[in-house]
Length: 321
Image 1 (cartoon, rainbow, N blue to C red):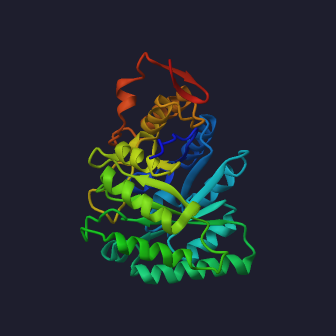
Image 2: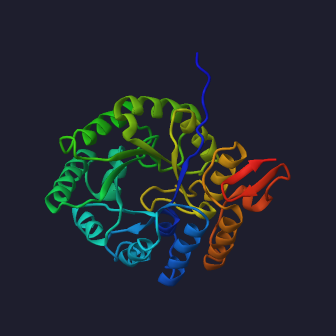
């Protein structure tokens, strides 16, 4: 048996501006969101999900997404992504100039109906229509499908592994070789455990190969970073995270608390795995966001405990002393 080889680096995508803010009733002013993007970029984060093209009446917190994309695209080397729920949202994403659009596909039939008002196979068909629209426009935007509720659902309960893999194969078959660019697995409701994560990522990679490129975990039951580790050991090197561990899904009761960006950065840095994140700059941003969100429930262990003396800070991440 070959010894596991730790990766030299991982990519952290900050999704707090979308996944975090959609679960908070207040609407942050656009100016503060622009400072958030600038601060994350200044801290070395090079992938940010800045918002979602959903109807403003449904999520007024995200109504300024086009403006955020326009600003984010002025920052050199920043990969800008947005979430889109349907073809109309995809058209707005293509108009915006974003680099990636994330299309959620709920494996849970019940969650899919609650979130998108469509059964999973109908969502697959709409993803096919979005791929065709991209081709017709000649758009360069890339498409990522996030397999939501892949590890369980607060509405439906158990989600079959075979159903995850079936839907994964279905979306990868779209577009005749010019379809989905990346797929990810999401523990939308915080039900996953490390053994389950390791096994599903291993089986999903057998189906998707190198197109499997994201792990999205919630820390609802305290297993977020353990699940990150399980995915890491199954070969995953890109992870979503929210500053201060905010976030959740409006259509998944109890699904609060994404993996905190600062905790994920600390985990990787403590093992000598580079993230490119500047620790001091990240914590300065967290303090600023905490002021903007005063009164909201924030999370994150390392923000409370601080760094141990056995670690040094550097622009490349945390390193063991």
